[in-house]
Amino acid sequence: MELEKKQAAGGPAGKPGKPGKAAAGQLLEERFVYKDDDQIDKAFDWKQFTRLFGYMKPYARQMLPIVSVLMILGTVTKLTVPFLTSMAIDKAIAPKEGSPSLTLLYTLTASVIVLYLIQWIAGVYRIKYTNVIGQRVIYDLRSDLFRHIQKLSFNFFDKRPAGSVLVRVTNDINSLQDLFTNGVVNLMIDCVQLVGIMVILLLINWKLGLAVMITVPIMFLVSTKLRQKIRIAWQDVRMKNSRINSHLNESIQGIRVTQAYTQEQENMQYFDAMNMDSRKSWNKASAMNQGFGPIIEVTGGIGTMILFWFGAYLIQSGDLTVGYLVAFSTYVSNFWDPINRLGQMYNQLLVAMASSERIFEYLDEQPAVQDKPDAKPLPKIQGDIRFKNVVFEYEKGRAALKGISLDVKAGQSIALVGHTGSGKSTIINLIGRFYDIKSGELTIDGQDVREVQLQSLREQIGIVLQDTFIFSGTIRDNIRFGRLDATDREVEEVAKAVDAHEFIMKLPRGYDTEVEERGSALSMGQRQLLSFARALLADPRILILDEATASIDTETEIKIQDALKILLQGRTSFIVAHRLSTIRHADKIVVLDHGEIKEEGNHAELTERDGIYNGLIEAQFRFL
Ligand SMILES: Nc1ncnc2c1ncn2[C@@H]1O[C@H](COP(=O)(O)OP(=O)(O)OP(=O)(O)O)[C@@H](O)[C@H]1O
Image 1 (cartoon, rainbow, N blue to C red):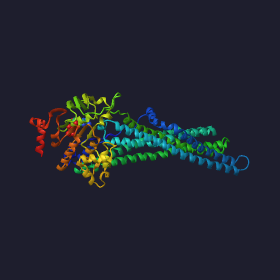
Image 2: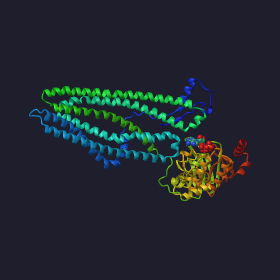
Image 3: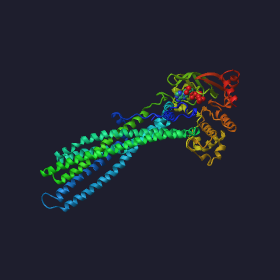
Image 4: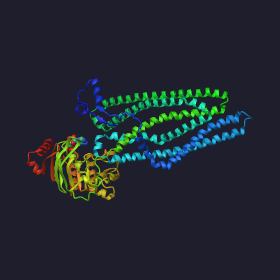
């Protein structure tokens, strides 16, 4: 489910005057637009079916034989019971010739009990093994999907909101769970049972067998057609629910903005409308479901009527015994269940196909940036970086960088400045090859970044982003993210070096304090110091820093500046700089404007010119 937000004219940021009620409703409807998943009503796709069931292959040889034996054992015992019942009636209770035989009755009863026991044990083990197979398949699918998504490039995530990716990993995988744990084996059992019963019915009395089976195609048709309608109705329910999920996800993530702009009421109204929509579609689907049972029962009832009417006739004419009629009626009642379930199963299969289609769509997505087949590892670098006439586009036809040429010597620090949207973050994203350039050349120590193995490149680059990501876990774990094999002492040393040790020791459990998800309990400055420590621990030759724009108090700023000095020592660094204090100390300042380098030089050189840089600096002072 894709999720897009369309800002209504004069949305929260605009704070318009209060619109009229109708207009408000209109605005509300236009405000959130969530793209739904496509309606699933496609023909059965064999190719996809075999791909999906390919996931069972590793376990098929090992476990399917056991499951099949158990399944056949269960079915055979189940189908033998009515036969023994008929024998009990015809031979033990009311034999045509001779007197009733209690011994035979007891033997038959004991046999029935043994058969039920076998059936029960076979059922228990069958369920156990199918669950194991099902869970392993789901585990493999989920792992494959997660592993693959982790490899996908930034452009994939640019196009998709986190919520929609999440839904695919959770909901779509879960919807396959039932199919793999019960569905497949039930399908096999039902098929075996159906064929078994048909053969038995025809063997007992082919005329009666055929008469009863007249209703089968009708039943199957009704079942499949109606189920199709019901499936579409349930799909509608799922779509409405997934829209609710999208809105919920967005609302919770944006709760601070919502509260700041007092939009809770409007949000609630929108949510109510969606909630009501979901309730109505649920009612509709559920009403259809309820109508289904009686239809099946009536069709089944017609079959039973034929059975007894024609059966009675056959008994009178001596072609059938009472015992066989009783057995027949048990077989027939065992007959409707599989037919009913097969219709249901077909629909479940179509839903699973739709989920797997969405899962395979992600699995087939190739990372936009990946190693060339002959890519070599990048040896330990010095840190010379060269942009030669680099052009880059996020979207075709809209260049974000229009021919950037820049020569950076190992150990130099470069401050990137420029108006918002001028291309600063784009430049730093290209150094770590998170996107591939359109034309030109980008080299590190003379090696084209597209020719070397991605991992060997990124391992030597440290990145501190503006939105520092703190993972759930302890403070120590978060710093160690920079280098997983670092000792506790090394972790503390880097924390001391960037002046984070002091605040960490003030936390309730020091380095072992669990940070809340995303470090919400830490201040921006603290989070930044932690990410500096993380980068220092990684000890990369190239350091990229997207400086936080949030104004930090002077004391923290001095701390961060000192930490920065330590962090930058001896490394090539790119800093998207906003604070004059950082910019001023850079070896080279690069001024960007609309994707082009407009000025280049150090602070003293650039302030002498009456250019963009001077304008930016003056604006900062005016602001102060
Ligand atoms: N993921 C993306 N998809 C499409 N266009 C993008 C994407 N990211 C950035 N852009 C566009 O590329 C241009 C450069 O953006 P970039 O993020 O590099 O600017 P910036 O100088 O870092 O801005 P800021 O200071 O606001 O962070 C902008 O016009 C922006 O709209």
